Image (tube, rainbow, N blue to C red; front, side):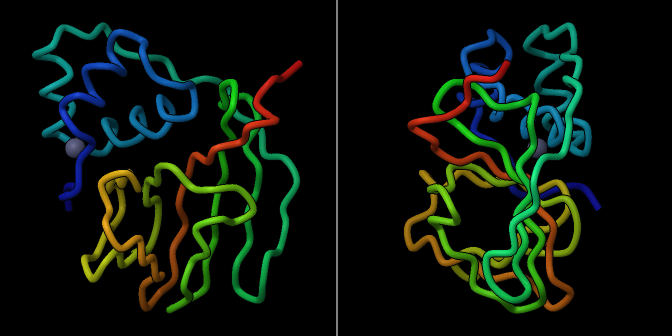
Length: 156
Ligand SMILES: [Zn+2]
């Protein structure tokens, strides 16, 4: 099934001219891979295609029972962190886990955001989410996420 929650046209346009963080670019690239609608929009805007960068999984932290967060290196820009989040079924995700979340892309399972289901390939910007109530679905979820990291993002 194609994704039903998309990045804004402005986000896509910024992404295409390189005016977005590497972490956001990673989430958008993955979304466009899974989303025929955004793929055709990107083509219409004249993108040559964006090669995904090499990613490496860093340390996995267990934040609470049923919630694990793995730092992804090689994708974060200045002032941001990129995470792979694994949540057990029907778990409320803390928004500040361990850094404030900015954007999410669902990879597996489902995430219910303010009462709406987000599934594989769906993109979410927390700036556009009023209540910011994130609960994993009945089979849990895996998500890629960017977070604000004021002290981080400078990688060797
Ligand atoms: Zn889309």
